[in-house]
Image 1 (tube, helix red, strand yellow):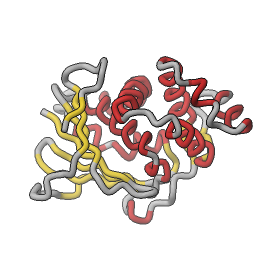
Image 2 (cartoon, rainbow, N blue to C red; image 1 turned 120 degrees about the horizontal axis):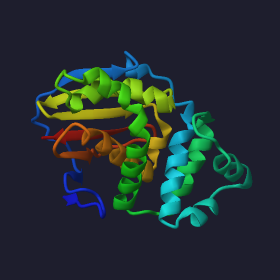
Image 3 (tube, helix red, strand yellow; image 1 turned 180 degrees about the vertical axis):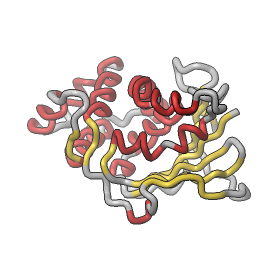
Length: 222
């Protein structure tokens, strides 16, 4: 079932479903080279948390959020400056605090989409410049997904599979934040913001079967 996200442009669609088992697939990209042996995420870029806090403030959720944090975590997160690495433990406290707010999947998705759009304005410029004149499509972003991932997370792994001409599966491995429902839907939102930069319409589907340190999404576009 497709859930329309309030306030998002018509081309952006979100679904939560199991991928078509009949789809032919082939490996497309992986980060690191053997993601099955990736080390668990150790650090997270502060910009990710700061962007999320901006969206929580915009929705008048920041007070409820801070009540879920212990004093040390609250001080460290609210006092963080952009562009530095934070420990995975601190990031997990952030995501756990948002999880405790029991946000709807639509709100989580919209927070991720807005945060992703803000961060990707700078992060994707290099990729898009490289693609200029080369027929850039969402595959261009997926080809460089590992590079973009490493700018936000230290550790973890990504395995991308081509399911069709305009369909891909993005599997996230060794990434503890994946255990949080909020994080999974927010990451779908962030991915959708990236996909629609180079597609007329795009949807991101959260596949079933998420684990305590892994998840998978399906990209589709036209």
